[in-house]
Image (cartoon, helix red, strand yellow):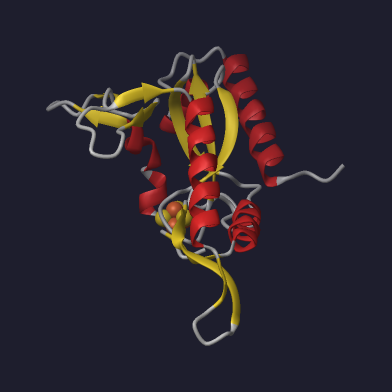
Length: 197
Ligand code: SF4
């Protein structure tokens, strides 16, 4: 069975850990060894760095619902485990720091659906089922009301210019391809993406 880069790092870590345990040493752990202990019981999932169009792969470690570490994914075909300085500091997106530099989970992070009706002044908390129904209903109604089969010169256009779609850099290439197919099928022409994917 071929050994991936990630397998290699895991095996290397286990061998190094065994040597340390077998030695009976009471020396202070090095920084890299501390990192490996910090994620020992964490759940691992993969994602994409949201900052730019390179789309580097990251491994996210979480414990009890909290992110404890983010690092480059060595199995990712684009970045092969590397991250630039922005990607390397990705974990800080979900944290706030006090004056002593101690970080904690950002209490202002939005984790629920907030809705403010047209001309409304207050935000209402909604669930995702409600929000998705509402989005689908508005897309359907707007498309039905504004769809043009031909333009004023009689050229077939099959489009609506009343709906726009803005993608997310958290979405990978394949997901972007599906979104693009959907929006084109609806007749959208105003399609963009923060990372221009
Ligand atoms: S790690 Fe850097 S280069 Fe890679 S996607 Fe993030 S910002 Fe772009």
